Image (cartoon, rainbow, N blue to C red; front, side, top):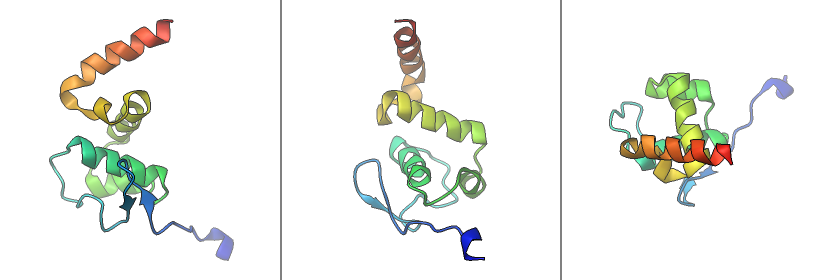
Length: 99
């Protein structure tokens, strides 16, 4: 039965290079999502601390919303997570896809 157990790392590397643990992630009742907190949650998933399902349950997010955070980081890095700049980064990415 050992093969069925999921082994998780104790730490992952955060968006700013700092170690992330489950205790250092934003609290489950977070309602104000600043860029750093979004990036920490995405880094936790990428580092294996949490699964996407666990993140969606823990933070009451839809899978689409979390996926949009991942896409924003992949395309534009942390600045892509800024809500006020979504349209700018979206049009920039679309222009890059044309060439």
